[in-house]
Length: 56
Image (tube, rainbow, N blue to C red; front, side):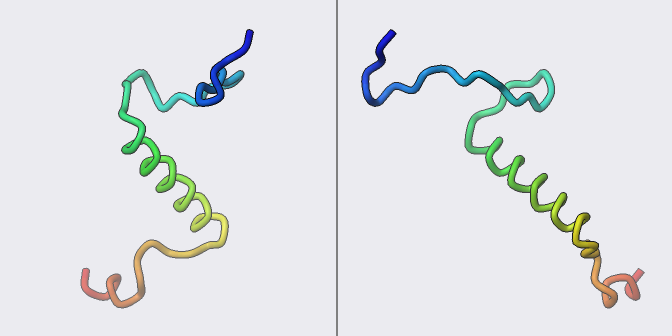
């Protein structure tokens, strides 16, 4: 089956973030945040700076 040059075929794999349906733009932000957090955990970077720990 041929598609118009602007139409992409359906992907072979899909990613799910639960049962809810989200608009594309917020999902991009959510995915970016999760990747950012994963890199911070991998590299051992703290979410809270030492000065913020002292305020508590």
